[in-house]
Amino acid sequence: MSPVATRDVASAARPRATKPLLGAGSTYWLLLAVVGTLLTIGVVMVLSASSVFAYARTGDSYSFFKRQLLWVVAGLAVMLVASRVDYRRWRRLGAPLLVGATLGLLFVLVHPGAVTAYGATRWISVAPGVTVQPAEFAKLALLLFSADVLARKARLLGDVRHLLVPVVPLTVVLAALVMLEPDLGTTMLLCAIAFGILFVAGTPLVLLGGIGSLGLAAGLGLIMSADYRRVRFLSFMDPAADPQNGGYQFIQGRLALGSGGLLGVGLGASRQKWSYVPNAHTDFIFAIIGEELGLLGTLSIVLLFIAFAYGGVRVAQRAPDPFGRYLAGGVTVWIVVQALVNIGAVVGVLPITGVPLPLVSAGGSSMLVLLAAAGMLLNVARQEVWPVRASVLATTAQAERRGRRTHGGAASQRPGTRSARGGGRQTPAQKAKADAEHRRVRPRPSSTRTRREERR
Image (cartoon, rainbow, N blue to C red; front, side, top):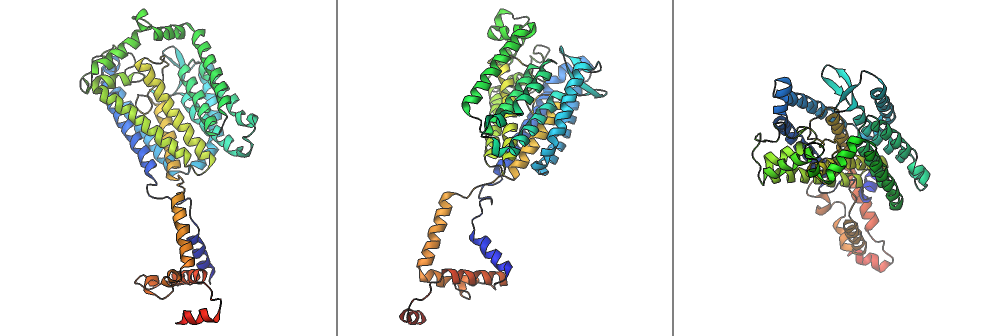
């Protein structure tokens, strides 16, 4: 038998655990549909929520919408490239991106040219009217670098020291730099990304619980360390105690959600966006969605993020290698936790931290980085591994055993018969494969009588 035919026979006899079965690729299309739907809703709602504020500031009701549309188009281009490039190639981007993000965070802290807004210095001006936020790139840098390091140290993760170092110290350094801007919301998200990657890497739950408790204690201490954060936290506990200051945004957000009812007041007909709800097109866009699209609109947003979480977890479970698993898990935790923090603040179950609703709120750097991360997740989904079901393997094994015991089963596959030919002419490779199967399955006669019976 030729080497080519031998390889064909061996590959046919060996079950392929990495070959997709029925339904493979569905996670990719699910995630793509969710991201596309959220982007579409976001662009429409940014136009509606920002029109009044944009006209008051610039004289053009479409100014913020145009800017957001440009960022979405640029982000979609980045997502398309990231979804087509093998995700393993992005491992080399982790360290350089981490260095660049750290330098950017230091720049906004010490350089007088950094842009200050809303009482925080977080942005770098790169062109007239265009700013970037290094903290957003720090999220992606932490994710890529941590996933790469943990994948390289796969055999050493049984040791807690190798599991936590350098992920935890690096997270502390980045969180401290972001907190100095100050930006408590992004600090929380950096910690959530690191926490999610450590969870996916198999960190013991007792250790994760201890790290989480320390993080919560540190966060509470940071809240109480600044007057404006302390006022905001106390207003969260009782918004009615300070309705014109700390509790104002909470109250207006709830009024927007409550006035929407089941179906909403209609797209573009919001009253709260007329300078009542602060940051209506960014942090509190979920309130405007509830007012204009009603309970059904807000539930649709929640269901979309639930679908994203389901797809992300499934991709992480079926990733081809540890790096893909850590990358998919980190992106999923990042986007889902950010959505929970934003929605929780709007509905009043969490303090306001200034975190935008991912893929929906207006924002440049945030939209670009989120779509880049979504593209990497989509590429992992394109290569997900679907294991062969145990029932399929068992059925195949039983059929092979029956074929070895049954002489008729071997004869039905004899070369030259109608069933073997399949009604057509065989190629040399197919004929060699059939010959090999016939010689492997057909029992050897053990006596002269058996050979005479076989000839009959």
